[in-house]
Image (cartoon, rainbow, N blue to C red; front, side):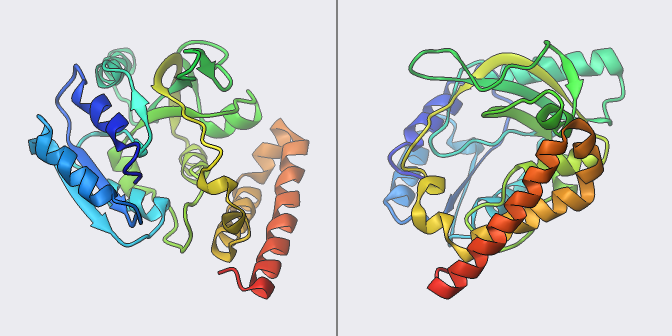
Length: 270
């Protein structure tokens, strides 16, 4: 977590109008002063009794996610990064939408959660592709390859499904979240999508994915190679039906990641 931006998350959570939640914070091996900053914020927080705090060596975002899921006892899981900011009615909004889902369908076992949009904090406008209609029932494979939804989106997910469907426990900074969303889609779970913007999207050009050493790191390229091969062999037929170009793009990325893995071994960038 970043000590310089964690204030955003604390301000966002502490301002929530809906307060029936638990708050799990995991500091994944940050090299800055984030541990001291977080402990200071916790000591001053009016919600300190809701907080469970853990600091660990750098295991990567995907394995940190798995740990947070294991620790969670609530019905729904809402992820937030160290630089995230969201509106005060966020949890109230999700609770309302979930109750509407129960009222409409009764049994919601086929749903994994609720998807919403994010906004540009400088302009207040929606970032990314809007959903084609309010209350769209779909899954993340259809959203990506049929509806061509791109850019950042957000949502809450049923915790019990996350406990049953985790990220691979492999080395690297983070395994793409699409692995999890596509796995739930493959198993038949649906999401309900709304164009309401609840979270600010802060685009950082200094982020990890823009770092040259990250782009040529063997473990990270091996993870992406694993992901694209998994997509091809688990979802290839469905993706090809939606978009042959997208299907073959996954094969192109396989070749790219094999090349980068080979070069990273030669260059010693593990």
